Length: 158
Image 1 (spheres, rainbow, N blue to C red):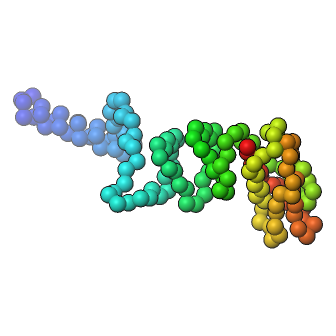
Image 2: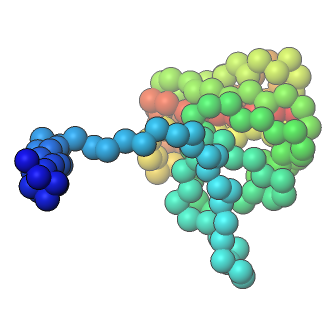
Image 3: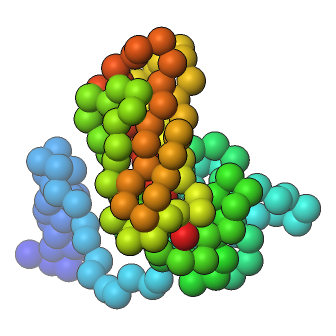
């Protein structure tokens, strides 16, 4: 076989292998180290990020969330934390209580009277849900109209 014929045969074989790989669905993979993801950036004058999904977020300045924030892991606050306008400077506890009616007490585990506490119904309700009392061991729930709420989420802090 002469050189032009050999080149043509090799070219046809190589084309056939590539076409077969494409039909079968093989991917060409180049294995090399991945660089770290670049930091989030925004255009000059833009003050907002939207729809950010991240494994870890570290904010060196104010972090403001205009809508819902879902945290599925631990939340660590090393500076001041303010909840509903009240600065929290000590421990924070949170949880949920089931089958809550007016007068239900929820143990918060702070061992001191919380300076801030809040309640949220786990389902939509049409009557106010509020705290009637708090002490070193518990917070007491108030609900108008003798309503029973299946789940109440709470947070309390000093």
